[in-house]
Image (cartoon, rainbow, N blue to C red; front, side):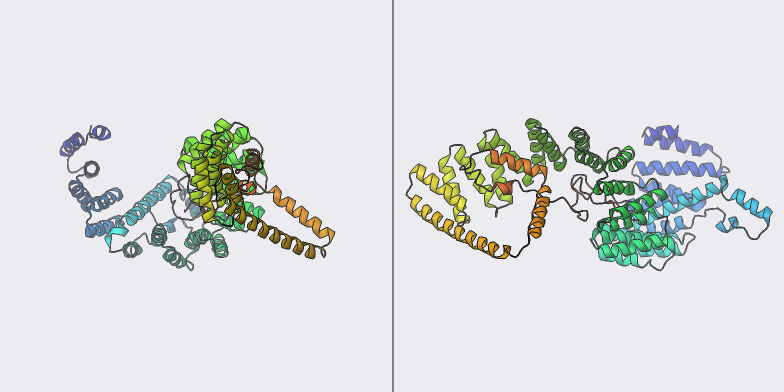
Length: 595
C-alpha cells in the first residue's frame, strides 16, 4: 500500500503505511526493516524533508550499510549544504563492502586441466555476471557522488576533486582515481579553462594504456577544436597506439586526416571505429561527410539514412540528407527533408532560407518569399536573405517595401555603397524624388569618389531644375576623366607585359578563369540575373554594381568551427569520458561531441 501511494505521489499516506508496516515487522527480520526504512527516507526526500531523510539513512548506514542508502545520504546532505557531513557520507559510501570475489579467483593457478575447466565454467556464469553488475553500480554511485560534491566541499572545485581522489585512492576503488582526474579535466573545459584541462590530461601520458588512451583522446579532441591539427594528430596516434579498439580515438584520428584533405584515409579510420563499435554514431556521420566530399553521393546518402534510423530527430542528419538530395539534383526530396528539419527546429534561419532558395529555383516565388521572410524574422542579419527580399519587392513593383531591407543591409555593411544606392533608387522609382535627392546627397558626402552617385545627382538635379547641377556635373566630369586615365594606364601595362606570354599560357589562364566562374553558386547566378533584368541599363538600380549583387560565398571549410550552423561539414569529434550536450541545432558546430 505504501508503494502504491508513493507511485500516486501521495507521500503523507505512503509514509504512514510504511511506518505501520515497520511496526508490524519483528526486529529479527532485519533486512526487510532496512528496505522499508530506505523507502521512508526516499519519500522524505521527495517531500523536501531532508532532515527526516537523513535520520533514516544514517540509521541504515550504521546498522547495515549499502550503496543506495549511502548515495541518498550524500544527496540529502548536499541538499542542505552541509560540507563536512558530505565528506563523512562519501567516506561511508566508499567503505561499503561489495561482498564479491576478487578477479584473481578466475585466473588459473596452474596447468591442472580439471581446475582450468572449473574456472572456465564459472568465470562468466550468472554469479560472476551479478558480481560485475554490483561492482559497476558501486563505481557509478561513487563517481556520481564525487562529481556532485567536489565543487562544493572545498573553496574550489579543483581542491574538492583532489580530496575525492585521495579518498578513492585509499579505498578498494583505487582504479576510479584516474577517472576522477579525467572528470576534473572535463570540469575545467566546462569552465572554458582549456590550459588547465590540457595540463591535467597530460599527467596521464605515463599511466596504463586504458587511461592513457582516454586522456590522449580528449587531448586530441581539444587540440582539434583549437585548429592545432598537428598536435591533435599526435595525440590521436598516441590514443590509437595505447588502445587500438578505442572507437573514440579512431574517430579523432580520422578527423585530423579529414582536416588535412585525405578523405579516403579518413574514411578508413571511421570504418575501423565502426567495426570496433557499431553504435559509434559520430563515425557513421563522419563517413557520410567524407563520401559527400568525395562526391560519392549514393554512399553518403546511405550513411545518413542509416543514421536517421538511429537518431530520428537529429537536425544535423536531416540537413545532410536534404543537402545530398540537392547535390543529386532532386529538389523535391530535398524540400521534403528540409520540411522535416523545420518541424524539429522551426526557428532555424538557415534551414528556412535554404527552403526559400529551393522553392526559388523551382520557380515558386510565393513559397520562396514565405520561407525567406520567416528566415529574416528569426535572423535579420543575413545579407543574402535581405538581398533576395529587397529584389523580390522590386520585381513585384513594391519599391517602398524594399527600402527597409536595403536600409538594414546598409546598417550591416555601412562601407558598401551599393546598399545606399539601392535605397535611393527605390525612393526614385516610387516617385519620392526629394527623398531620393537627399539620399544621393548623403551618399555623396560619405563617398565623394563614387561616379554612379554623381551621375544620379546630375540626372535628378536636371529633372528638378536645381542650381547644383553644374557643380555635380563638373565633379562627375573630373572623376570620369581620372577613371579613364587610370584605365588607360592599366591597359598599357597589360599590353606591355602581355607580349612576353605564350599562347599556351593564355589558354591556361582562360581555362583557369573558366574554372573559377564555374565555382559560383547557382543561387548567386540566379539572383544576379534577376537583378540585371529588373530596370534598364540607365536606371539607378542597374548601376549599383550587379556583379557584386550576384557574388557568392565560398563553401565552408571542413576545418571551420562556426558554431550552430546546421549543415556545416565539420566532422564529429569524440572524447573518451562522458557526453557533453550538443549544441543548439541552429547555431552550433554540428556534431561536436565530448565523450
